[in-house]
Length: 83
Image (cartoon, rainbow, N blue to C red; front, side, top):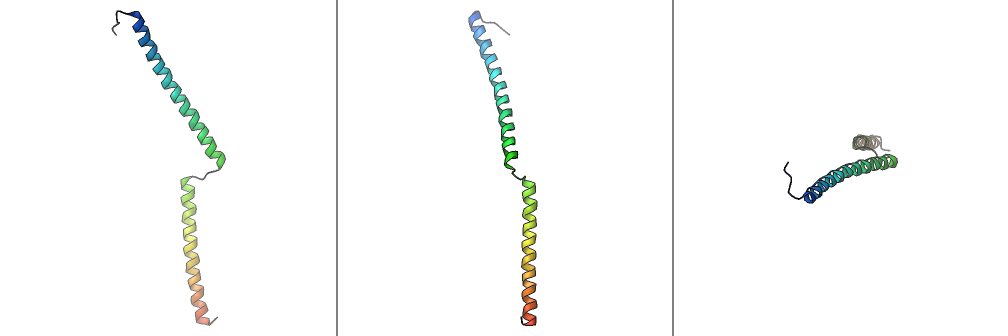
């Protein structure tokens, strides 16, 4: 590393480099805190996961199809017995 003839500029350069490192560390810390707060908020809201939602959705679709099949069968049996 070369040094400039002016120690004042060297000190300013070092200070800026240190400030950039501190800013990067603060950014990481803020992201970690915000992520933890967001996860706590979601957990407290009792939001279901995507996997749970898809499983219940599949069950609802299967139940609806079964209801339609049974309704058609009941209608067929009623028409045969004249009810």
